[in-house]
Length: 315
Image (cartoon, rainbow, N blue to C red; front, side):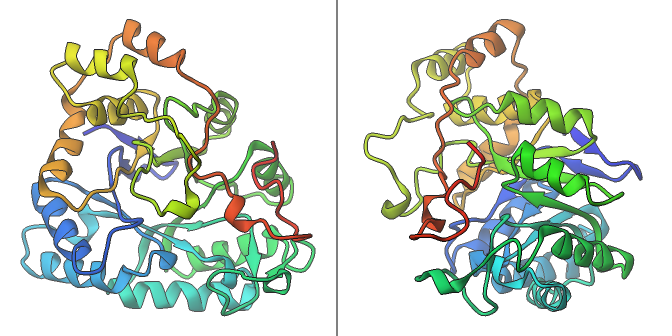
């Protein structure tokens, strides 16, 4: 398994199990299957509302003694209602309690968006806090404090544009170690990839297969399908692989981590086996031509009249 190395020599496995949209009643078994089949990277978030069940899976697997806690990379994310400095560590402690862990390997600011405390998802303008009221640097400094306290080993961000990364980096000596963003052949984000490489910020690709199982409200009409894209199908046939495996390996070949989600044992195993595929230069060149800057997760669910987040990706 390829890994990405941090400045202190810690390594995150390139392929992890995503848990966004993993239903209660299924995610516990999915995590157990993943770990027992060889995954050593699990991606979580408080807003996914399934961390307690994931915690049961982790506790069960670690208690069996074959897989040690220190051999598994576990990421979680701070939700938007806990950006104030006094709320960050309590939110983290709740995640640790739910996951039944003493520390996280990586903790991310989930979005560059702030809500009033206790708001799961905004329904009106008053549910938001502006970035003047809660600057990202305030949240970031609390994340760094969590790291100092040993509650997390690494800290980073998610859904940050180059502009937002630059704004944050101008205010701190300790840069994000990871930026988790949507990345796939239809949204290749070359500028962001190069900027992060130049500044020793790793990237994790979410929705690498197109997130076809997200709810209808988040979908556009006639969305393009990564899994049905003719170029991907052709390359999959060439390598005797599935389209999903090609998409996952493409992310790994670019030097990013990638977190495909599944609760199906067959898909969980197949996704990990993507690591055995080697895409050649011709494959990568063909896939590079698929870029159309199409977002499956367009951020429009944060847009209400006059709220401060109408252009969350700075595009």
